[in-house]
Amino acid sequence: MVSTDAQIWIAAFFTIAATSYAFRDNVVFKFAENTFIGVAAGHAIVMGIKNIRDYGWNHLAQGEMIYIVVFILGILLYARFHDKYYWLYRYPIAFLVGNGVGISIRAAIHSDFVKQIAQTTSPLIAADAFGTINNIITFVGVITALSHFIFTREDIHTGTLGWIPRVGRWMMLLAFGASFGNTIMSRFGMYQGRIIFLLRDWLQIV
Amino acid sequence: MSVWEKLTAVPREVVMTLVVLAMIIPAIRPLGLPILTGDMSRAWYNTVEQLPEGSVVLFDIGYGSGGYPSLGPGNIAAFHQMFEKNLKLVIMATALEGTMMYPLIMEEVKPEENYGAVYGEDYVFLGYIAGEQTAMAGVLGDLKSLVSTDYQGTPISQLPLLENINGADDFALVAYLTTAGGVAEGWVYQAYSQYNKPLLGGCLSMMTTSIKPYYDSGQLLGLMDGIKGAADLEFLTGHPGDAIVSSDILSFTQTLVLVFIAIGNISFWMTRKTKEEES
Image (cartoon, rainbow over all chains, first blue to last red; front, top):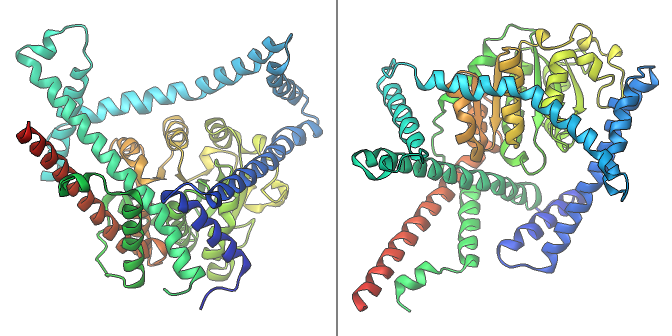
């Protein structure tokens, strides 16, 4: 029994319209694409206004005058559209970049550098055989892949030790393969969700 | 044109039709393949199980409609487990569309009906907070200076759950599900590195290879690997949903892809060999 819910029918139509591109570009796909962009843009505008109200205006209305600075910086972002005063937009951009870097850089060094090096240099022998194999693969992979990016000495790539960066290249290719495989699974994971929706919620045959 | 040459140029319409059929057949006639739960999902499940009753969890819905088929089922299973454990949930969204995913998830979880949970006392939804890492730093640093109302506009002073929550020290666990690499890394930077909070992460399968090093190095206590991780969590929590239904479909479709890859490679080598022999 096919669903009688109008919302389900609309969702089913746009699901089929969006995926029809996989077969060939067509006007129904274009309609779905433009509708999605319109809806997403509308939603983004509403959420943007809500953010200004919740995280800016509400504070200002409660007497937190420092938020005037926030509004001024926000308005200055639009100066880039002005022929004469476009340079003013650099101030909020500088603030945003400085703020973003300041918030993340210490933690990034800790998480991406210190912790990863510590993990790589941990003892190769683990509690179980698979753990030991994993540790050895990680250790060999890191050393050989790093050697692939040493460009200051040509003989590292051509001499007796040339096999080390070659192993590194294979390690990276294996990593790219794993990444590609995961990407396929991820895309199918998204699409099968819509297939289940079509079969269960729309056509109601499963 | 030889058979091998034809096989290297199968029209995409044929490939897509076969893929769609490979999804429809196991959906209509499930194969019932066994689910082998992975370490990362079990670690997620066990971390939540070990939390004392009443602990407060900060949960980020960091995905939109595109990520819902992959992450939504895992989100539903995670909420079922958390409400069953009587944990308190402070939910936020670092994705713009996260606010639209929240009602979809709650329609499935039904916290009031299934667990007797009360909005404002057992869980709250703060809505979308812009800024990614800036938002995370704000929520963990000084929640009340950043957020004055929940998503519906209710002042946080009227939400009993938030009465004693000011920042990172008041959260027993931080968890997130996201389709954005910046958000996945951002929570590691802000929650783990900055505040040393126990952290659970979930992402699309395509992101797993870049996020897994955080799990391997102990910065993430558990990792939900897309729809596979969601199926694991549904199985572990005893709340089967879309992800478990998807398992058969994914297995069937992935096998088809492997067949395509094999055919593509064999036909490529055979075509080259034939040309070499001819020349």
